[in-house]
Image (cartoon, rainbow, N blue to C red):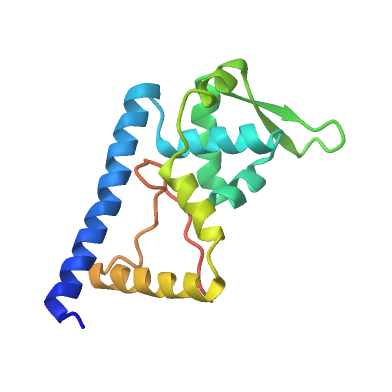
Length: 164
């Protein structure tokens, strides 16, 4: 059985590992593409499921639609994504990759955020609840429960979901 010091040491090392992989990948992707991890992730989601609307991308990225809208705005400004209004319902806007977006998606790796989401989906609900509880404890230790979350290594702010 481990003592308290060993357990704390393991926790600290594991947190360091998570930050290390996020930081290294973010820097590499930013250097290679000039885009953030969430922007690359959005491009991949559009590539895999497009044409797609904002709310569907948000659901697949576990982000608020307003957050995704900001990401998509920046991608559209770089001519990587285009918007097309639905012919059936003019309120619906479909997103597709431009030729530039299609070319980019072939050359960049999966981002950590996308891998994390996909791997979490494969975990049993009880185990997910334990992970959620443990991370919730970390958030309380830092006293940051009220800070709006941002997508990992990004400038966008994710609208927090209020727990009832």
